[in-house]
Amino acid sequence: MHPISITVELVVGFLALFIMTKILGKVSLAQITIFDFISAVVLGELVGNAIYDDEVKLGSILYAVMLWGALIFIMEFFTQKFRGTRKLLEGKPTIVIRDGQCDKKEMKKNKLDMNQLQNLLRQKDVFSVREVAFAIIETDGSVSVLKKPEYANPTIADMQLPQKPVFLPVTLINDGKVDWENLKKAGFDETWLNKTLRKHHIDHIEDIFYMEWKQDEGVHINKMPPKEDQ
Image (cartoon, rainbow, N blue to C red; front, side):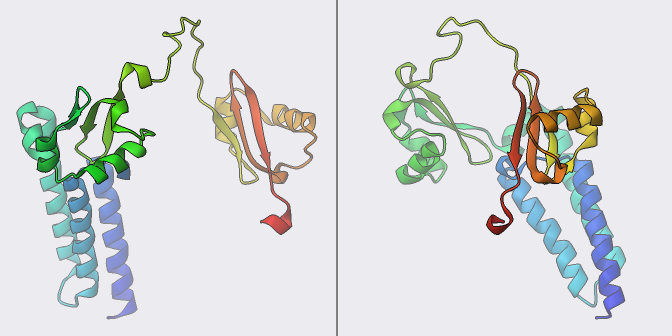
């Protein structure tokens, strides 16, 4: 194939997929359902086959991507508009441990054996089935766990301690470069930044690998490793 033709088709396919994902919304890889995964594979195959098949024209790429995207969009519309369709189109969570007892029937339906269940539980820092009151297999294949009271971590409410406000950390410097937008959103400026660095005996921003600020804890700084360690 001519390099120019490959370039045009690849760029158009890339832009079409990018626009389609923006229209359809996004979820993390850990949250995609089986259907989402299949949809991603099909879209990739449509573009890939079109690019390397001499008989497939540019219009075919756009048509295939738009048609498949339209079908997904329609399905998403139905699942959001009509709750009764969610079970059929998205699936539903399944309780595989109920009141501390494994539900063999539900495990069989989900093609899940005991070793696989134990693996999923360990990913939630649960190393014994005896610790679990309820375990639910979500539609994306992950497991949600509710521990028995005697194995659950105590909360602030359990210990009757006063609650503190929660603040998100803000990244100010990453890999030796300042995120000026985050710095401004945090209510600071370059003068404050330089003053803070001098307080920590740092002369150059490039000497900082990572720096974050948290309202209740102040700044946290990780310096660049020595050059021989990089």
